[in-house]
Amino acid sequence: MAQPLNLLSLRKLLNKLLSFIPALRREIWILATGRLLLHIGQGFTLVYASIFFVNQIGLSATQVGIALGSASISGVLGRLISGTLADSKFWGRKKTLLLSAAVSALASLCLAFTYNFPTLVIANLLMGLGTGLYWPPTEAVVTDLTTPVQRNEAFSVTRLADSLGLGLGVIGAGQLIAASGSYRTLFVLKSIFYVIFFVVIYLAIAETNNVQEVPQSPTQSWKQALSDRFLMIWLLGNTLFTTYDAELNSIMPLYFANFVPGGGTETGLAPETISLIFFWHVAFSAIFQLPVARLLNHFQRTNILMVSLLLWSGGFVLVWLTGVVSNLAVIPALCALLVLALAKVIYIPSASSLVGDLAPQSLRGVYFSLESQCWAVGYFIGPSLGGWALDQSPEFSSGFWLVTASSVGLGWLPDTSGSKHAITWFMRKRAECYADARAITQLAI
Image (spheres, rainbow, N blue to C red):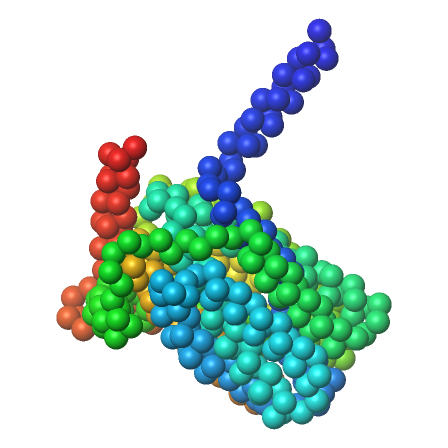
């Protein structure tokens, strides 16, 4: 009798685990698989790009920050083009994704052969263009294939794939560097994974832009989107978050490597240690992405966003502490990355799903193009400002993280009427729209 009982218990456990998996269309899972592979490639260079260009090529932190930030300049152009192409009946989401993969693969190869500041800038401009072309269509595809009620979990699934891919890439890069010390190989591998992503999209994803209404001209589309006050207010607040994310990914690894006296080496934490810390950062995000997304459906977006801001602030304070302690700096560094992981897990799915809810079906590419411009702006400000700060005195570089932590107060600034906080007001309005969409969907079912 024991064996049947064990099998029954195992079946119940399996069914309970399966119940946590969102019921989404097959295409969402295919796209998530493609994004997993793409982000494995991105993970190869996530930690080591700035370290390689400063410590191996011999560029200054300011030069590297400017070069990395230059990708945002071309990224703006890529996003503008991508939004229009993704909404076009002639071109569409799929072809735009394929174009982005091809451009990014070429850019990764250029980075592999970078040897001075001008070549680094050129390669990053090309990478920025590929990245700009990528985000509007991939977010529009997820929105096309989901209902408003499903979107938070659908975006969490794709972000989970991103996190898993980054984690695998980071830990793989750490092992490769420890074994061979060949930084350039990381960029070649990154290019190969972009090619694999191209193949997955080409073979397995159909065009999702099936709007039947007569399309507007590009000028009319952009004019309608820019006149959406809810969207404009959100873009201002969103830029704050994207700047934080840019500093986390591009500047923080270099800070840990060169400005942490208690890190165990002459200048800071060892590259292998930094890789491991960022792996746990990504792994923590992956573990909690879906459970947190499901939990967020039960709370007001206003409160969720403010909690995320506070977590960003706390994480940056811990980064400052990493540069202050005389030994065991790895402990506050790890705690900082875990807190910042939770901040991102809370913020990112809601940010994408709310834009999907606001966007008319025929303008999703344009709306996500504007939303992704926040990432272009943030990834220009973050590396440029952070690189400049790291070229100052060690005390200044350490204090930079306290200034960043205090900047979350900008999220509480009042709007032009002076009567309410802009982001809070927007999020309450958005919550009302979300509730209406949920009610309409339930009635339809």
